[in-house]
Length: 94
Image 1 (cartoon, rainbow, N blue to C red):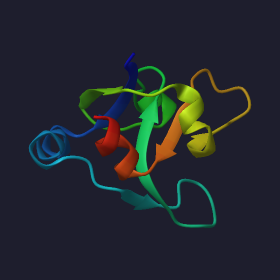
Image 2 (image 1 turned 90 degrees about the vertical axis):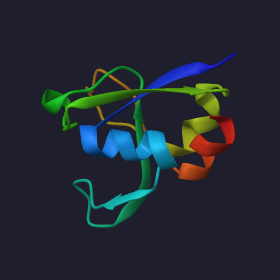
Image 3 (image 1 turned 135 degrees about the horizontal axis):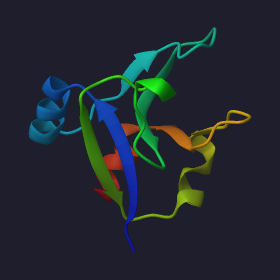
């Protein structure tokens, strides 16, 4: 049974994703180490939650959230769940 996740981005990037698929993004994401992957969230995020962009993609994955556990970024007091997963996982279950 597919599970819904969300990915906030710009309209330009959303068009590229719909045309050619996701690509791993790179950044420090308020850490000292560089990380890469595709950000997914449990509900639609906006700029107030740190997700910029004017486009929201619904990502249906045929897996359970526990399969993404190793990619979850847990923040105390945050009202949603977020994952920085590898593009291969999104492509394999898409």
